[in-house]
Amino acid sequence: MFRLLPNTVRISHRYLAERLRPGDVAVDATVGNGNDTLVLARLVSPGGRVYGFDIQEAALAKASDMISRHGLLDVVTLIHRGHETMCEYFTEKVDAIVFNLGYLPGGDHNITTNPATTVRALENGLGLLNPGGVICIVVYTGHQGGKEEQRQLEAYLGGLDKKEFCVGKLDFLNRGSAPFLIIIEKKATLEGWQ
Image (cartoon, rainbow, N blue to C red; front, side):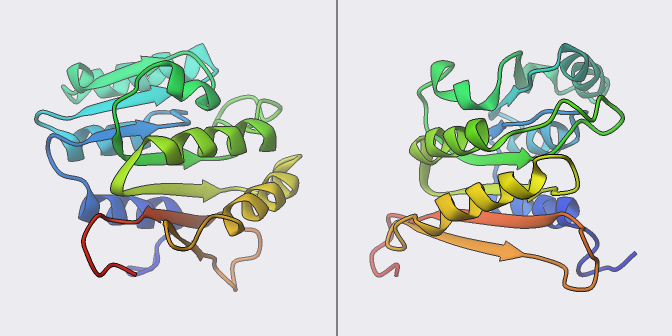
């Protein structure tokens, strides 16, 4: 394992640890097994809140059990809906949103994220971000439809206003089809930010 660049999930967690503080609000747009949800809950505690979305009840049950074992269930609200519905559940601004695209590890590989709902979720999420807020997206392309999801995602994000959002991509050139990381930062309200 490499120390500086271990994998995209761990890099996103390190980045979030630099950005989030106790009392912040975060969204896990794809709860899966709950690993990102747990990281977010630890970072925003005490006083913060995490909202987690997933379309699979089994994933939410597993995540709930793990988060409960770590004593952080009171920080987390798990919602059995797709990430594209996040604006229907709260109107408060958020400090971070995490997406882990693809399929549930250990689950049915035929149940995956898809371009239409992912792009819609990002549109909604960008509107929910506080100034200076961030979105981390780990993109897996090894599943059926993964390359198309990447294409549509990058086309959408490439069109964002550069005066309002900074969008970066970390990809591993010598790791074949390894997942890559996209980080979006919303412009802060500080004067002189460019």
